[in-house]
Image 1 (cartoon, helix red, strand yellow):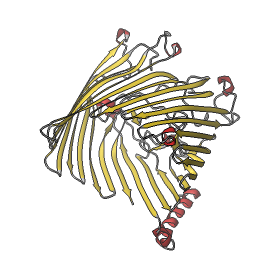
Image 2 (cartoon, helix red, strand yellow):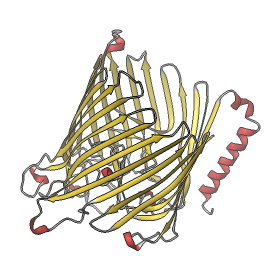
Image 3 (cartoon, one colour):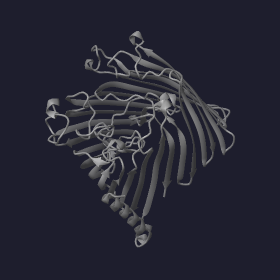
Image 4 (spheres, one colour):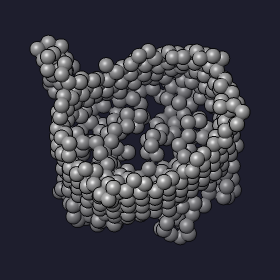
Length: 544
């Protein structure tokens, strides 16, 4: 460990741990100290069958040590991160120094009944996140926390005012920009003491400042970027009554670069609307969103998935089945008109409480909004998913799930007419022998069709038909053993995986080995590309 900062951080951490165990023990006994450790490690191997080439040192490791302490109105915490180097496919590993040991986040907070003051790294969002959201997602290697000062004032839940100022984190460093903003929420339901009605109004403003005089591969003036300030603002309404809730938000921003690939700046706007209704065992939801150049980068000098100031995820169903997740949809920030609808209905047996059925149907789609997005000036579909599933609890021991999904997407994001349609069938069966032992199995089949391609000129994304299977044996509450296989019939490629996990108390460990297909890894509707790799993976999580 040659880096002086790394030595300092290690010494500080050891000093903090010793301090908590010795002279400050009396002080700590009056408060609450918590810590967690998560480490994800992979040993890679070369695998010519799927075109997977191991990194130079054949090893990757992402680790996080988080410590928090609170006493009375005071709390503080820090997170130490190590990448030795970052796991293959994580954009953290594409930085100049992929091996890092550093103080990832830190904060000091004072909270009274109505006032909170926070200094350090800030995680928060305004409204639905359309103008600002800072958060961490370790599965994506994502962390865009705002390092600065934050304050909020809450007056009896009637008025909530937030303000912030700081510089955003970009991978293991900080962007050269500065972000400031304010958010005001007014709750009329609390003001007028309405018992069954919720009515909130919310407004937000965010400013990003970054000098345009730094050295860059781009000439920003040629792209129409002449102002170092970008202004974002939004207004939202939230209404609820009995089982009905309605939400709507409008967000816009001043002239800015949405993406470098487009090559020019423009103004941006987003319209978001959501409706939910629930009555006894029936519920329904519908979401609509119009996006027009609303992608906002943390820095004009950065790149990648993490270079994001706001949050605009795709409106599509998030699956946990292997074949249903092969081609997840990603939002087109340049422009899209998207919607999603869900229906749920639960049917219970009158003769047995252990017998009930849950029926679910989902529809989602996304279309281009401008003729400039297509080669012939027309509007085209970029994504469509029509799916239905039935979860049947036949008894306390037996549960089955049947899923059908028809997904159709455009590999060119609608620019060209061709699409790929996938018909996916899933059967999922779980049987509990007793309270300790259970067995679960999945069978999946994907039938693919390429549409609109002349002279059989299929795109590289077309992989043909797939089959998949998974078998999982659980010994509650500690052990879980599984094996899975995905087989691409068209290309004669196997993607196998097997592993075992163990959990006891606050400790969980998982060991697995297998092949991983190249494709997008998504979390919360945000995706990063992961290249194909084969290796041995050890994941360990400990909460102190």
